[in-house]
Length: 324
Ligand code: HEM
Image (cartoon, rainbow, N blue to C red; front, side, top):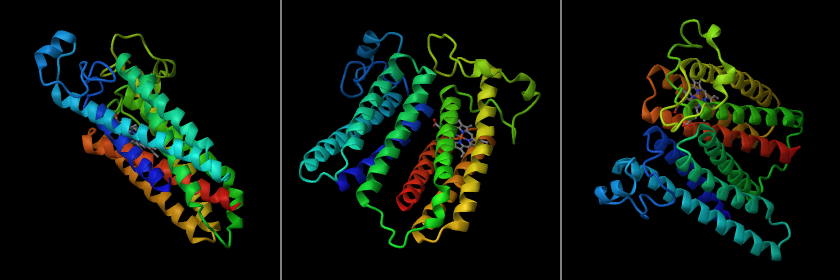
């Protein structure tokens, strides 16, 4: 079971990275149907037959492959989570201490993720669905990692009583990072990455043009590929993600400051180190997204390190809570 769970955390990370790569290569609609691709289990070789089936969506093989590889990896993850849930149920019969609620919840979550993946295609990249799919993926990996921690039974013989008072604040920091990831997902799903190209906020009279109602609603459109919001709305989303990043830095920075001053254990010090490294790298990647105009590798890495930052906070919260 522990091996299955470790594999699933790694696989979930691969699925998240492949998902970001699929979106950033504009391959989200690489296959216009679901779960197959132009009616087949793999990318069809016959482009003419594909056009006959879907005249409005000519086959672009490289995009279709990006999309299908993401689907195969996600399908494998679903099967691994199914195996974890079955193993948990079987082992529970012999050992009442075995966690079973979390594996079953994960099975429900990964099934819902599959539905969101389908709606991403059938609803033409509707941004709420795209962002929901991103958050579902980040929640799945976080819970798999939590299950891994629970099975590992982290051991701190001497305890770390001074960290007890930081329990609530560490959980608040976790929620703030999740909120910041949601804002990033909204920017990405609405193609607002290049709405502001200057630092630290945005160019021109951005403060006068903010439009919150427009930025956080979804205008009607036939397709959401390449975005459906106007400039002011995209600029508002982008600026909010930047403000969010500064706020996140303050909150996580304070957690690190107090954490390093109070901790007495190597286990928590190591966890704090992971949070600090992930935060610094994530900020550097975010700024690089803007300065170098969204290079593919940087944008994919910004998504991947966002997931790692979240995991580092899940780990820290778990260790503080177990210790309190
Ligand atoms: C702790 C801080 C941050 C976190 C957790 C975070 C997280 C994220 C996430 C999860 C995404 C969505 C990626 C995707 O869907 O592929 C995103 C997008 C983005 N972020 Fe951040 N971000 C942070 C800081 C920043 C900063 C400081 C900047 C720039 C100054 C920035 C600029 C961007 C841009 C331009 C995008 C859109 C990229 C795209 O379209 O793929 N981020 N962010």
